[in-house]
Amino acid sequence: MNAVLLSLLAYVMIQFSIGAWVSRRMTNEQDYILAGRSLGPGLVTFSVFASFFGAEAVVASAGAVYEKGLAGAWVDPFGYAFALLVVGLALALPLWRRGLTTFADLFRERYSPGVEKLVVLMLLPGSIFWASAQIRAFGQVLSANSTLSLTLAISIAAVLVAGYSVVGGLLADAVTDVIQGLALIIGLIILVALVLASVGGVKAGLAAVPAERLSLAHGSDGPLRMLEELVIPICGTIVSVELISRFLGARSGAVATGGTLVGAGVYMAIGTVPVFLGLVGPTLLPGVPDSEQIVPRLAEVYMPNTLRIVFVGAIVSAIMSTVHSALHAPASQVSHNIVVRVVPGISARGKLWSVRLTVMALSVVAYALALGAERIHDLVETASAFGSAGVFVVTIFALFTRIGGSLAAYAGLTAGMGVWLVARFLLQYSTPYLLALVCAFAAYLVAALIERNRP
Image (cartoon, rainbow, N blue to C red; front, side, top):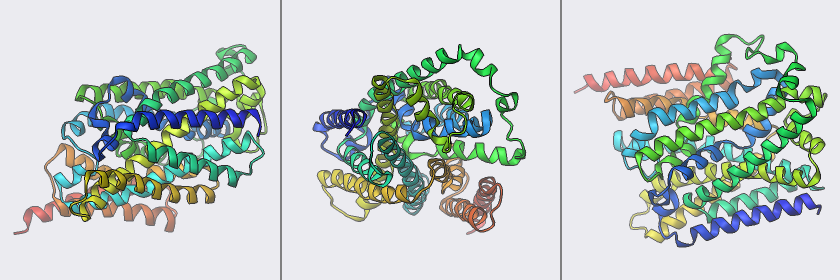
């Protein structure tokens, strides 16, 4: 093994040890899922930032900008940062005040246990796709810095992240998020500083970029298609169980709101670094065959070996945080909202192990998807869109209106999912998500009217 790989594995083991130490007093389901609702502003901020600033934000975002210019940043960081801002301003406080253990609890309280379980099952595939994207990215980092094949590297990555996720709950994840978030920020700042020094600063670097690459417009893509690409991450993030689980563990409503808003600001600020690297990438390293490798290639060219180890550790930091939340949050919903409710009389320790075993099961599925995928970006896009259109519509009605009951919720959820699947995979419609949103909204209102008028 080379020095980079050994340092990388040592870094992962240190993070694993910290998570295990923080989790040593964890005795029940509430401790694992919500950290006893004890998270302060710093932990919420870094947890929100680190949970979303993963492989997509560093590797795939820079690759998209490398290919399309500034138009490639339309989704990340702009779309995701805006979504985090919306959640902080409008959703964090009302959701926290309800005292929910998981996001799905909202739908049981507002509608019925059946709606609760349907929401869990509809959001589950998206979370698994998200986790598989991070596992594949982790494998790419291991493979690029060693002689390991990509398949073996992904397998090692899956074992590491599964063990890390099973041992640590929300508190352990939040504590390590601070370390991982700082490592990522420092690594990106070092890389962009070295690149800026070589090109003569930001102004000189951007001056060498062709004017057409500095436009947010997608060229041949129409306005509806551009709106589709933006709405998917926004709506998908707003109902993301990975995000919501972070601020539900806050110690107060003010911390939930403030931590999410500051996390959105940090995401936007640090997200501009991969965008800049993607913009200047074709000038510095033209003809990179795989655009998602532009950031690792820049690190290889401009960083000395010692600093490159730091940077690789920073990317792994992003991945570890994101994949933990992508496994922890949905597993918590499956266990708390389905398994525990069908196993009467389960003990507190049994509930804790139910969550952990569910995390392990989801890790296996995510690993299988990571092996079969071709690109990280494709996994992430599917993760944001899968099932979220109907859940978004029903969530807005549930939180801010008294319109509709369980029938309306079922109608909105199934219409959103069904229309998106048919339009996306059978009809190859150009804007399936927008169509799914409109149909889910209409189906909810029609069903609510039927509920209102029936005896």
